[in-house]
Amino acid sequence: MTEPRSFCFSITVKLPNLNEYILAERTNRYVAAEMKKKYTGICKMFALPLRGKLNKDKQHSLAIGWNLENKKVDPDNICFAQKFILDGLVSAGVLANDGANQIGSIHHNFTYGGKYCINVMLTEL
Image (tube, rainbow, N blue to C red; front, side):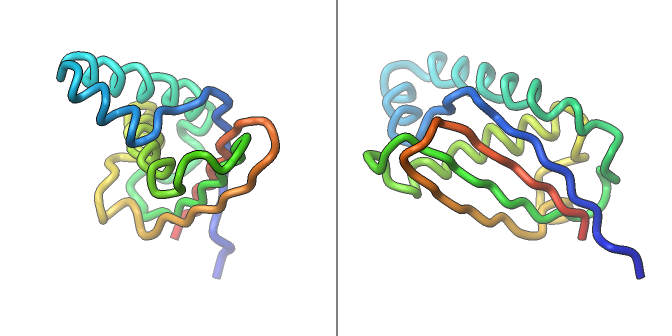
């Protein structure tokens, strides 16, 4: 049996948390839609090097490492940004879709005190 293949990429642009997205929604739905489009595009840019390396039709496990400057925002608010990451992976052609047939699990890990960075590892199941 072959080892599952894993590929990683990092996102160095700060993604909005849930509170920031809700504020945008309350301000104007077009502001929130523009925010989603912008940050999905940013995640797509960081994911593009993985295009063609994974079997995009297989199911994958995601491990997302959130390296944050401080503990001011709750982890559940931060994890909201996975929406931009998954949509970026689909938009980049790395995954066929972000539904249950393609995503088997998502694991989050948080570290604090360093420079902001998100490390994403995809593993074919």
